[in-house]
Amino acid sequence: MEKIIIAGGTSGIGLATAKLLADKGASVTVTGRSEEKLAAARTAAPGITAVSLDSANVTALKEFFTRNGQFHHLILTLSSAKGGGPFATLDLEDLRAGFEGKFWPHLQTIQAALPWLDKNGSITIITAASSTAKLPGTAGLAAINGALELMVPILAKELKPLRINAVSPGVIDTDWWNFLNKEEKSAAFENYAQGIAVGRIGNPQDVSNLIETVVHNSYINGTVLNVNGGLL
Image 1 (cartoon, one colour):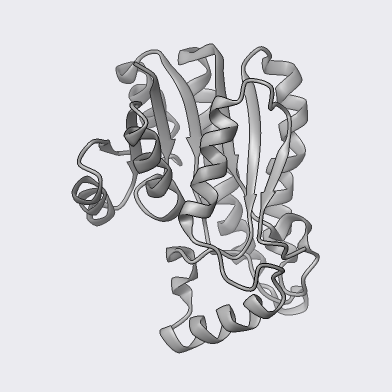
Image 2 (cartoon, one colour; image 1 turned 180 degrees about the vertical axis):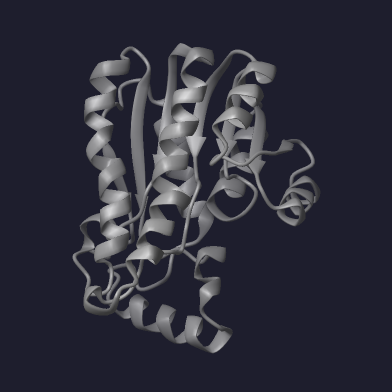
């Protein structure tokens, strides 16, 4: 049976992907730090395994992958809402926290997983449209996600035949937006929807469908694929 690990897969895009892959017959393990989200994931998707793991903890990562053993695909949906805002007033410590919450945990998780990944398997990183959207107020987010995307084609050559790709979502209705209150979120989504070609905000399933394709298409490698409804 195909074994898949989704780091940070306890909600949103990660959980939608876990459900989809489990429904297709894979053995899926999701990891996360929040016990509340882990419990909710177990309830929402009884067919998956949810494990408490902090991807910022290198020792814990190595222990987890050693216990888990060989597997086929790694999907990283680790995220951080830190680092956004106009650059002139951007708190650089907030941006640093954004890198600590997303950039470094991605690299640490990948390094810890490499000895256990099937050589013909894959790594899929979930970045964000901020890396290329060139929107005011997203310079910090662009730096975080762009740094990950720049590494993808290089790592594809270094790690071959193991494949590595990135999926870059646009504006997706997930918990990432919970830094806004209900009214602010509704107004932001309405504003974004006007500039998106398909005329709506995305949902986690829009992204999980592409992730599943990237994971299983053995001729997609070293690529960043956008799923943004025409935002750009």
